[in-house]
Image (tube, rainbow, N blue to C red; front, side):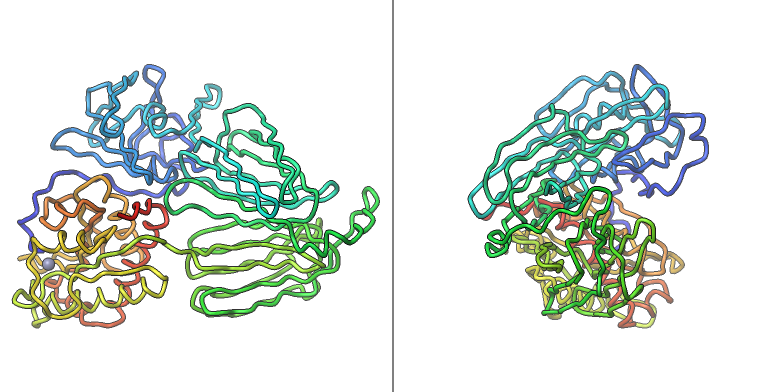
Length: 558
Ligand SMILES: [Zn+2]
């Protein structure tokens, strides 16, 4: 894209990750969202019962993004499940999605460069739980569990837990009596403690309760009649988590239970070691021990990894590392994590988010690691220009159309390796009319569209990457791709911007235009010729897209 075509509509709010405390917070009010203390760009204040805080950085831990459109003085907040909240400066009304308007106790306001919003009112409109603690001068905000739906058959129990924002799930297995404990971190459960009788699939009943507040943890305890295996799946289409509980191997059930160890003298497991089997993009991890293991599995990101802690377990080899360097699994490390009480920790480092299933039998804990699929999505990649239109041309003659085609082909390969379907606007030096591109993508059934360009400016000193979007549903995709570009490219990140480009206007699906680097800048032109740099751009686009697909609803098949 050439500069000058762009009609800038908005002043975008800097994407600031909350790292530590900002200056001036001591005097103001603290805001903690899903366990993360927000590093506010200006001190929050109280007004009319509302905490008024600057919008930047507030919504990321809730899986939502905010933008301020200066031209029409509008603030737009949108989340993964397409809830959109709009407010205008000076207007005490919350516009939720297309239909709902509800009063807000206080209107948003501008002070200097900062836009302040009524924090409780906006988060409540997103369905979050908020509580202001006067004594601590702290506002707590957390995701809220909306519903728990169980579906039982003799060989499987499925529980779908739907929430209004992201939750983290931890599972623990406890013995005497046998229980499965599932904790939902950063999730408020505002219904009364509940008991759900099940008597199926090895589960006698489920109890749900708010286990802890500040930070919020909701807990489900499954009383078990026999050993079970569980599978936790986070939905790519919503904030729901599905638990699947199945009875383990029937042969084990028939055997008499070993006598329970005496009180205060619990059996200490000795772990002989861990083994790993790779099979294509999946893998199996085995942890072998004497006796039953009490364990919990947690997921972390950046990098994606699974952490398995085995309680009361001595790790005989002390330390063990398995380099896998596979398509989806990088390594497995195991070590004695603490000595008293003895905890063995096993860390599986992944190349990307994966699903996992844990099962235990006869002194062996097995963790099956499977592909995380973005079922139903079709990603359209649009390499800009081509054919009759070479796009911008660098000082030494590099054509934008050639550089971006190569980047798009690389991104296609990475997405396909992840099992994601890709449709290319062009996969050769072909002419495709600009106006046709979004329509072709839509007709092909694409669910998102990413247009790839190299930037140009008459001032050759201008450099860096930037990503454009137009519709609210495209904002998170733009942000995620730009985040990744900013991390890996080693050139300045110019952030995300809105522009009324043709390609962003007509597709009806989340659509962004990535300006990878300035081809008019001599150094960046040289980099754009370099395969390593092109590969890094493709990786950033790939990573941004997979992050987005993991949170964006799969559209219903036509
Ligand atoms: Zn271009």
